[in-house]
Image (cartoon, rainbow, N blue to C red; front, side):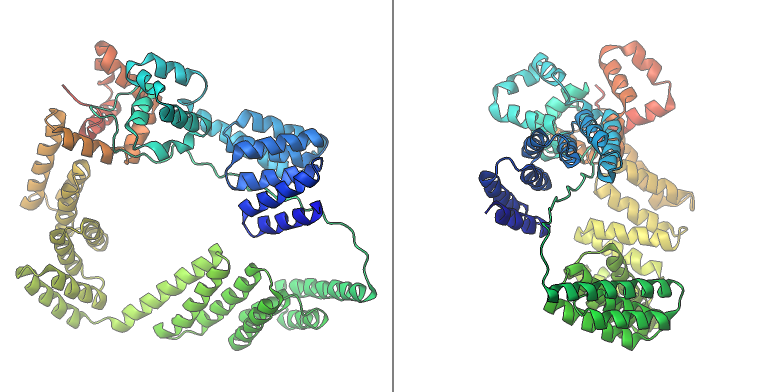
Length: 562
């Protein structure tokens, strides 16, 4: 009974249904509570669901039941990494390697834990939540002391302490933002961070637990023995075919793969390999035929989805090779998409993207007509003057399709998008203008205006100044610089309303540059000196780099000048 439950758990784990796997392993453990493999497998399932406390408990039980089994220490290390306890993870992996020094999984785990330990030590956001010092700081600060009486706040902080990467989940909680300020010894302007959000300080790729599946020896019947021998012969033919393929002896490779198929028709890899040979030989019809057979036979045998995906990908590659016009790419794209539904493989995704790109380029070549493009642009101009912006966008888009290199069409469409309030689309068009023609000053004025409307005054200033390098007397660009200076000075004088300040801070906290400044230990000390040691602060301001960073924080509303 325990073995049956274990087999069901293994099958559920392999299919990615970790919750069901846990149920079956638990059932097996109840029937066989001293089987260390069952605890190991359930630990892997818990870890796959990021339930590292339970994974750790099962891993400890595994080691307790079987202390000389290296896999238990691998489970232990993976659970500790998930809980950000890197020192303990390193110890676990080292103990496992004492038992099995050549175990690659343990070596890889030890390397991951070591890298993560170094990464965590260099990350102030993670350091801030470590140890009892966090609670001492929160208790000492009058602003956060009162929150410690609120159970939900305490639970939230405990969760962040267990895994600092969860911080991003609670960035909209003003109490958490205030606590973060206390722990980093930084005051976030006049805001507690009510609606701010930051990206994760550090994201680690967690090692995927391996499943321990023990295979019991079985007695074979005469028929099963013959079948096994045929499969072994087929595999040898496949290996010879692989050698021939690498030597570009394609005829010999086809012969070997064909023999393998005759010996064993339950392995579609022989078909997909022969299809690969046909693809190299330029025999695309034969390649497609073999791929179709592989998919059909694979469905009958319920083969691994990856094998089905491989056959479809190979077929798509053959269809791409046969394509002569944009329409010919459609069946190839459809085939790649089907392959991705079977298995999301990066190589297949790249082939799909390449096929879509090639199709688009051919469509543009087939559609290219500068004369019609100019006519469409003029129609767009007429609708723009009549303030019929959606209609204008339609004609400008047609002009771009007819002549993708005309910066005027992009510039005019950017103006329409701005009028419609579609600022991200307008920004994209303005940037395309600059990409196509860096000396086209209208592109800079369009981009700067959109950034100004998005209240990104520093970026708008940089855009206008870049445009002035190409046309120093351009009045539109000069006016843009003047407007940006007014807004930046408004922040410097502390003249922002509470709503403006809050909005600017929220936007700033999503800026990686601002995050890096606040994470810099030197800058954190500078900010402390500004509050507590004015003389030291004056010395800091003599450093141009420090001064620029302070100006960035002032403009962002993070630091206020009174």
